[in-house]
Length: 230
Image 1: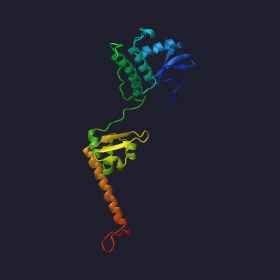
Image 2: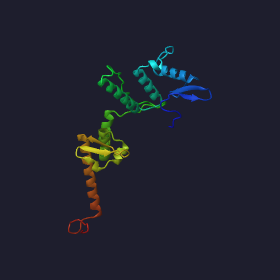
Image 3: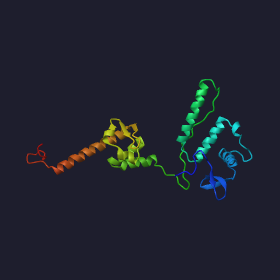
Image 4: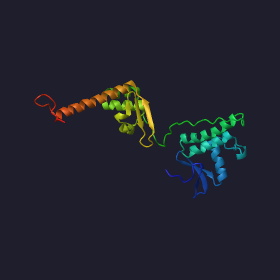
């Protein structure tokens, strides 16, 4: 989705009314025509401050309050928690250095942002399979589907991961699969149930190949294979 403003700016400008606004739950909240006052109103709203309480001036802001304003602005621009935490890690590194060399006696606690899923407006929660339903699926699945289900549960593989998986990626008790886009390898220890399912699936494939070979090349009069001599 293209942006009409930088990610660091939480405000949008409405030319028709001449006011600045932010969007919450699909609705516009107008904050006035003066940009500085609109930013102050936005921060009061984002930080949960009472309307009559005015935030401190920039010169009186603490590092923690400044960090909280930064986080609120990033969240307003749909920035992922991972990217916010990336910036916070850099800020924390500066404070850790200052503490280690004795410049600061005490540093602020800048917590990581929890990566909690957010529901889209108008969406519904997706139902999750229960343990009983998963066991029922495994009970009635054929060899290939059973192996796919166990790989999904064991390794968190999605349909594309299972489609990209090859027998050469499976080595004993582990499976190692490189990401198709990044090439970064992900490796997982297989459960005994997953190992048994893959072993049974491989045996089923070998048995099927043997049956197809015997149908295409029936034994000769001497009882030996009808395959031509090499």
